[in-house]
Image (cartoon, rainbow, N blue to C red; front, side):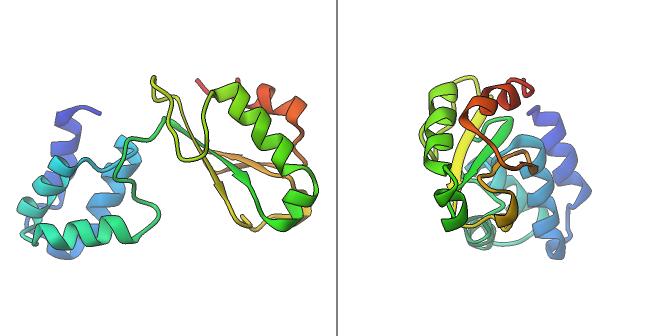
Length: 150
């Protein structure tokens, strides 16, 4: 993400400490993570302690303190999905992406994660890419889905 874009987001909330979460959400959305130096800039511009920025950024799961890929891939690991073949699906996604859960590839295309029940048990096993749900997913179909994301 360009420094100008980050500065534009920060400037929009300058002097508004009550807008801290909004500023962080915008930066996270645009940049896919919150670098420490950017959090320092946010703290200074919004006139809040850096510790408060770090506390919020590390508390909410929506924020990442490490670089993420342009596309976030989740494989549900809940009981229903597990019983319907999620382990095989995850193995195929790992093979396709070359990633283990929690990793991001070197060109920042994908970040792979797993989660306990993602709330769509009736369509499991489930693959979610950038919030889009792909239900009744098979290992064979996973490559077609992931190829849609550049």
